[in-house]
Length: 428
Ligand SMILES: Nc1ncnc2c1ncn2[C@@H]1O[C@H](COP(=O)(O)OP(=O)(O)OP(=O)(O)O)[C@@H](O)[C@H]1O
Ligand SMILES: [Mg+2]
Image (cartoon, rainbow, N blue to C red; front, side, top):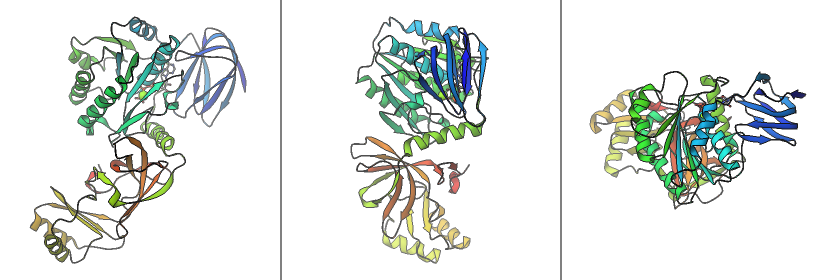
C-alpha cells in the first residue's frame, strides 16, 4: 500500500510491518531514510517516521499492525538537548548511561543518540545491560556491539561479545550483572571508541532497584547519566544519585506500552535471533566444564562410593545420576521410575540435606551459554538431553566451534523457543 505524508507530520507504525520510503526524506530516531530505504517494525514495537520532506511510503502491514499520522515530531526536544550535551566532550571515550522505567523509551533514546553520533562521524559502542528486554545480545545476557551504520532498531545488531547471566530479571542476579557489565566495559574501552552508550533495565522503583542502579553507576563510572522520566517514578533514584552528573530527559508521549505477554514474545524473538540455523550437537560430558548446574549437579561426582552405595540402599534403587552438593542432594531418575517419599526422607535425615529428585527429560529446554576454552562467549543453546548412560550432552545450537564451558541458565524453552516454567524448587 502506498501512502503520502506531508512534511512536518509523523507516521507512527505499529508492527509487524515493513516500510519503504519511496520518495521524500524521513527520519527515524535520528536516522535519515530516503531512496527506497526499508525499515522493519517488529511485532510489539512502534517506529516513528518523522517526515522532513513530503514523503511517499510503501507499507506492508502484518496482522494487527497499523499506521497512524500525527502532527509534528514525537522525539522530545530534551532528547536533542541531551545529544547536544555530548558534543565537545571533555573526555574521550565519553560514557553515557541511560536509566528509566520499563517502556519509558530507553532503547529508542539510545538508538537516537547512536544515530546522531554516527552522523557526526564518531566511533560508537553500545553496551546493552537489559537482561529481559535485551536488544543486542540474546535474552539473559548483557552484551555489546560497535555500531558502524545507523539503525532503526538496535535488534538488527549482532553482539560482538556477551556475558551470560542466566536470568531474565535483574533482581535475581545483581552482582553477576554488575560483574558482567564491568568486564564488558573494560573490553569495549580497549577498542578505543569515542562514545560508549550503556542501556539498562527498567527496574528503577523500590529500595533494591535504587541500590542496584547506584552500584552500577559507581562501578561503570559514566560521564553522564540520562534519566528518562515519565511522571515521578525516578524521584528516589535521582535523589540517591546526588552529585553524579545527570540530565533528566522526557519520555515520549507517543510511546507504545507492552503487556507482560508482549514483552515475553519480544524476548522470544531474541532467542530466535541467536538460535537461527541451529542443529543438535552431541558433546561428551568429559570435554566440558559445566557451571551453574545446581539444578542437577552434573559436574559433581558422586563423592565417596561408600556414601553413594549407602544412599542407593536407602532409596531402594540406583538413580541415573546422583550428586551430593554443599546444601543438597540431586537425584536423577528415569522418566517412569518412582521413589517412595519415605525413602527420600530417610536420605534427608541421614545427610541433613534437602534431596531434590529430578526426572530424566526435565532438563530438556534449559537455556545454555556456550564458551570456548579461553572463555570467549560463542553463543547460546538449548539443552536437548543429557545422556546419563553414554555421558553426553545434546545441545540445540548454531555454534559450530569447539565448546569447552557450558553455563546453565534459569530459563527453559520449549521446542518453539517459547519460555516454559522450570522444574524443582526454582519454579517460582
Ligand atoms: N518518540 C517516539 N515516538 C513513537 N514511538 C516511540 C518513541 N519512542 C519510543 N517509541 C516506541 O515505544 C516503544 C517503547 O520504547 P522503547 O522500546 O524504546 O522503551 P524501553 O524503555 O526500551 O522499553 P523496555 O523496558 O521494554 O526495554 C517502542 O515500540 C518504541 O519504538
Ligand atoms: Mg529497551
